[in-house]
Length: 181
Image 1 (cartoon, rainbow, N blue to C red):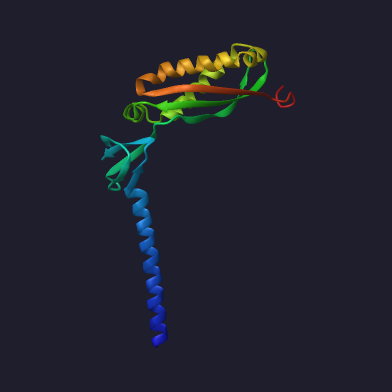
Image 2: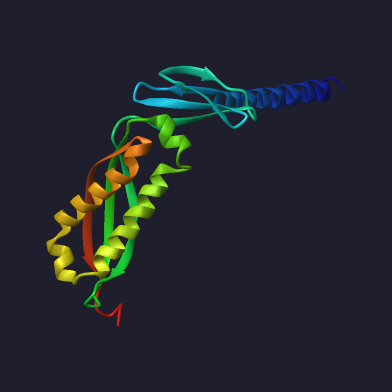
């Protein structure tokens, strides 16, 4: 009898310990935010903007408060590779990377739901239009010019929400001839 009572007590102690560890982990992941030197936190209460938080540790109430961390240093935003058809019928795959820096975190979060997805979408549309208006050779020869034009357009579009496009890199790979007809 005593052995089964002791086993039951140990089992209860183990289950309680595991539950306590999971609760502490959940609280740390959902309630405590650490804002580093290179980022700012945008703090919301009940879905409304409250403040911008600088470096430090903040406690938020789950289901009531939310914090979105925005990096202030230059970050790389990759546009998923995609295939374009040029004016002369060549199929090319474009690989694009944008190097962006947020200068106004509040505007970047409040004005557009996802500034990185907006950058990707606009870049893809711009590059599809550029590729379809010229030949494959023209596109490959003018990559630097196309990247500069994309950078200028993105800078113009994103300046009002505090996102600066510092550089654009574009790479092209020709599709093998047996893939497209």
